Length: 128
Image (cartoon, rainbow, N blue to C red):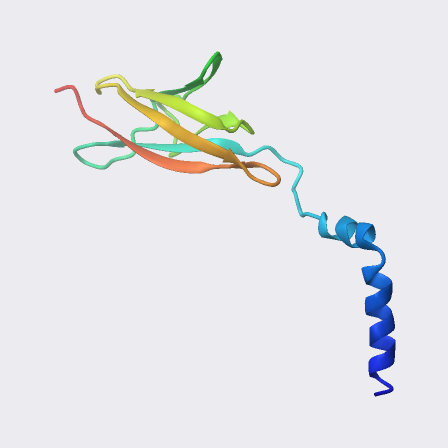
């Protein structure tokens, strides 16, 4: 029973300081960088080939708009949009030689530190 007595004192001490315990519970490991809300891959609907180079993507929510166009000579396979901005978006993706595609209701939540990013793959159908 001697070993139990000091433990009871510690528990009693800590339980009398709920603010101190709450302060300790608020610690997080948030990193100091921006997270894009949407990471987008664009594929050819027939072949499955990466067609991000030369593609343009636009996201909109109300009056907010963000867009990105990837240079045709680029080796990129992903487009990044809406830096640290949660919301419900309309997405339009287009590329020369392909039919434009529109997606609605893309929801991006807010996490503890950053947006809860989504990764999407959009397939575009060739015009011919």
